[in-house]
Image (tube, rainbow, N blue to C red; front, side, top):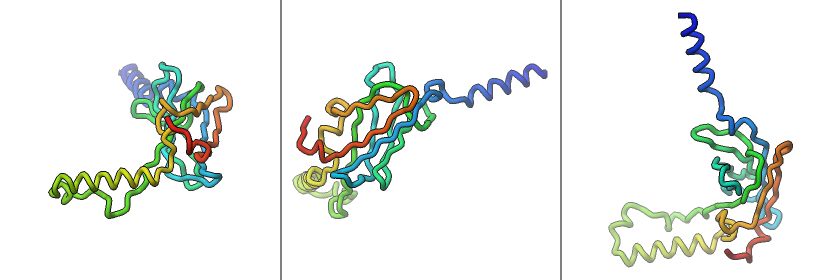
Length: 167
């Protein structure tokens, strides 16, 4: 009986440990600015260039424009990223003004009116874009980040530098 108790305890402790992929993470901090001013609310995503690096790495910038990257594997999250080379992409959708926010009643409107409202929303988002299109996808982003196995990584990105670039 005592052995069964010890075995159960060991299994319980083993199940609570982080996956091995989360145990060797290094600190990664990314600061996003636009012409030197911090940009808050930007989703920063890291895509591992190594196809074996399947974990999800992301963070959202704070009021100082700083994002502390975290890694998600299965249902567990830990700060940092595994050593390696990543493509960095960014996303921030402008907040729609109240008159452009879709409502339930909108579905009752004639189709041409619905399409007009949708076009206005798309125009608003395009005119108020914060993130240059080239940086929105890992497929087009030219920004690479190397996470060192000893010290991690820090990166500052000025969005203004990429305003004229297109995918």
